[in-house]
Amino acid sequence: MPERQTIGELLEAARAGLQRLDPTAAHQALLDGALLIDTRSADLRREMGVIPGSVHVPLSVLYWRLDPSSESRDPQLSDLERRVVLICAHGYSSSLAAATLKQLGFAHATDVVGGFEGWASDGLPVEPMPA
View (tube, rainbow, N blue to C red):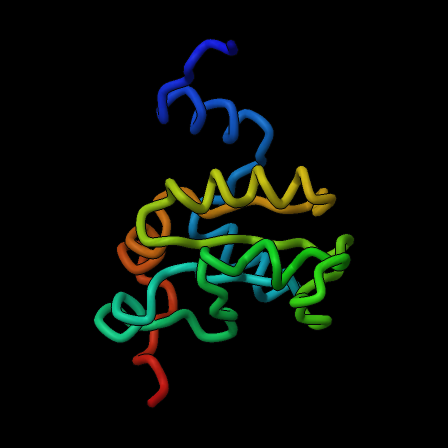
């Protein structure tokens, strides 16, 4: 039986394989054509706002929407060569998800250090969630 890993160890291993972006670099990546995927819940997006130009894909369906081999894929999101930047609330679940996307073949997948909280704290663009 394999030795149990703590969530901290799992997170550390996931991040070791990522070139994580600070919020300013993530904003520039978005401006340069990267796909910025917001995995936060609809409730958090309503409460805190959204990033203009980001795409909402809940974490619960992320892999199925992006994997080109999935019957549930979204063709606009399933380009393995595109830079994919994930953002969650605080930058934890997005690290684990980005590492999983790398395993699925998204060589340029990463996430945002500090998540949406870091993005907003840095004064980067946020707008109310559209009705």
